[in-house]
Image (cartoon, rainbow, N blue to C red; front, side, top):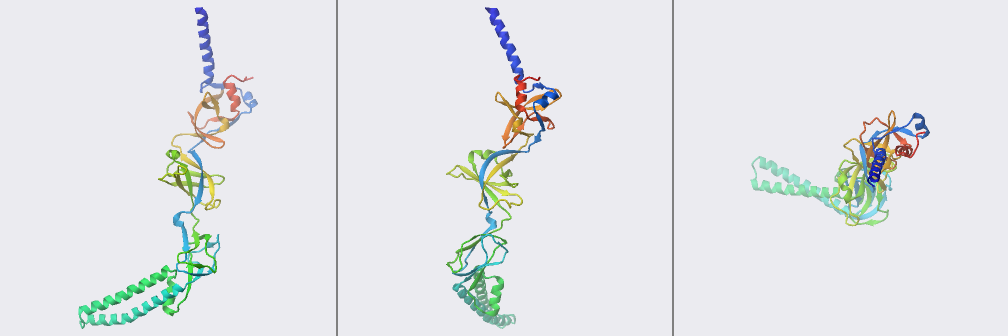
Length: 369
């Protein structure tokens, strides 16, 4: 009875050694060149990977706040002309709209009256200044004259600035000062060079003060806003790269939000698109992939090169005898490729096709003949 148990124990040990040796990652599969060709094995090189996919997420293309301007009616009036349509390229200072504004007439009249009063008071100011310099008048009289003159100056400057706020340019105000001709025509000028992305006004429409007419934006710089689940933020940092699906465009994360959206428990991450972005449009919803930099050595291999066994991953490295079974750790995956780490130099040739056949040979399920 004892001898029977001892023989059974020896049999278990022998079997475990035999099959255990097949599962070690450092095993070598001995194959001839002819057999390798018969298994249709394709060789490829390890590719150094410097970036690791973190997550895929939808995003929206937006215009930075500093690059977008809303043109509104600076005075109430009637729209008489619109010179641009949505999508038009405009230059800074270009007249985009004209309004007929009665209130503008009142402001111009007050400004011209202030200029007249200032010019009349200037004579008294110059006269008293000369008398003061000659010591003819008392200091109090000179102070009263100076104070009165400064009050007229302030009033004229205030009314001039109000005309500028109303939409009149410096040249238009200067023309008004010289000709003394009032006009109710108010021109709205493009604040920047850019593209008209929205038009709110209609010719013949009466609008109130500050009513929106146009929205103009400089599209030389665009951003993407990505809603990232807050539990995934630990792997995202400022400076990480963002890839935009189906385009050659990439972006760089510039800002990570500090608040969580209570409706979907996401945090908004903003990334600046790098270079030209002619293939995306503002307002467009896109699919993105956030990429982080890999600080340690890693390699990119096709998914077809990876074999799984007992919960571990392996690739097959070509050597003189045939192939060496090398263990790997998969740290990231893309559509057809995986990012892996392992004990590699980097110039190894690996089986990128035929891994299933090699696994069978390794586990003793195939025959080298």
